[in-house]
Length: 396
Image 1: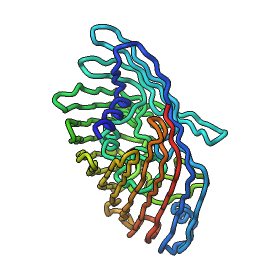
Image 2 (image 1 turned 120 degrees about the horizontal axis):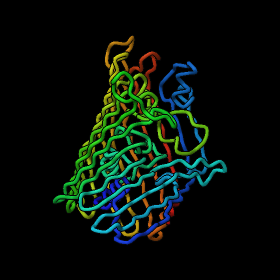
Image 3 (image 1 turned 45 degrees about the vertical axis):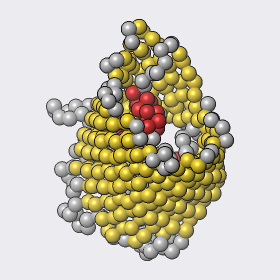
Image 4 (image 1 turned 90 degrees about the vertical axis):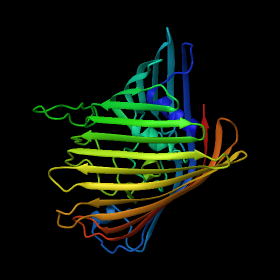
């Protein structure tokens, strides 16, 4: 657990451990054989728009897709990172990492992390696109490793890839096991569009993040908060709880999408998470809780709260792991029909270490969504999404 937290924080703040000037190329290729199944268990509303948001599956029916899928355990990527010793304990650091889809001819290389900064006895300061403090804490409590293509992890997903563009990040040194991460970002509110301030107001898409972490011995604990103001389109990746959605191909989009897209006319979205884990040697266990509130003057507030238990047990070269959680979604009264829904999910998997760099795996995940009411649709019912993958991940 402690190693996982350190690895996530290292990418978030680009803290270099080497005293030499180095540049390293690294990457991940993760491919598997996958099946995705959407089930509409009870709903009888046949409106095309509603069914389109629930997997396009008529009541009582299933939709099943089979194929090759990349990125179940870890998104495939290529990256470069380096550090230069400037003397007197000061170092210059950079990371540039792009996501790739090795199973497809068309390949849009998107930036996952891109930072440059300085580190020393004072900690580390970085500029660019980087992981949020919230994501560092949340990810440290998930022993399944934030599997991108699997349903079943129901704590607030915050933002799909955990990254925030155009941000300034500071990570403190560790003081007796305690450390902190602070971040401020300026957007963008849309692809390639920087945030702006109008009439002295808050900048669109500006984000603030803060995390406190304790990691010493077998115990790791963390608390994180983030706020995004006047989001515009910046929060399209935010999710409260999940629901089956129509997908034409297997891939990263298979992780269930938000039942309601946060960010429409939002004045602010505030998210916080708390969690703790303990390594009992024979098993690691963690408990995480998160809360998300989306406020706006033009509509009722939206809230989502969720918890997740994560377990991991090494058995020789095999590591067995799982997640179990539950979350809810509510829209306050003030509309024609208030929204109320809940979701429960699980993930169960096993990794077999063929070598230090190559892992064979099998994993299954499932979401079960129960909708009591959904504003403006009259939609009620139960829906499930189940995904199963067997594959191989190679790192270099």
